[in-house]
Image 1 (cartoon, rainbow, N blue to C red):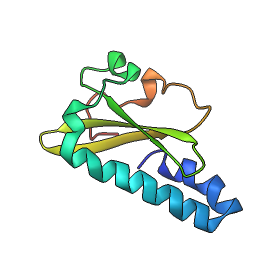
Image 2 (image 1 turned 180 degrees about the vertical axis):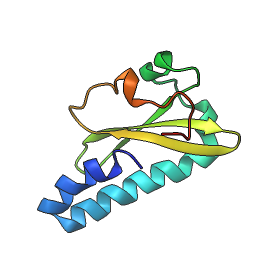
Image 3 (image 1 turned 60 degrees about the vertical axis):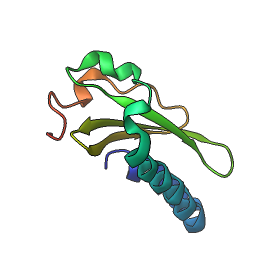
Image 4 (image 1 turned 135 degrees about the horizontal axis):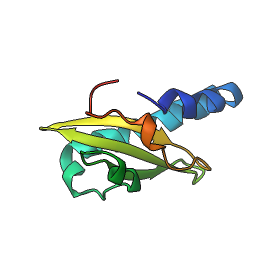
Length: 102
């Protein structure tokens, strides 16, 4: 999953427990998408591609916000990117032309 390791690695270097807590918050958010993914807002990055990119936000225990960018393939949620504090929008060229491809 693109972005998960990028976000978790710096945290794990400071605090393995913090990284575990971060991942648990991400996993809870990802799992909740099974219930309401199609109700989430379109992400600004959606305008770059021919499929919908949606976003959901989550915060860590310390209040740091993260954005999970995902798309739907049938009933499946496909996480495309996770963006952390201070990270800009994902450039157009970093998205596949079709979801699920590289």
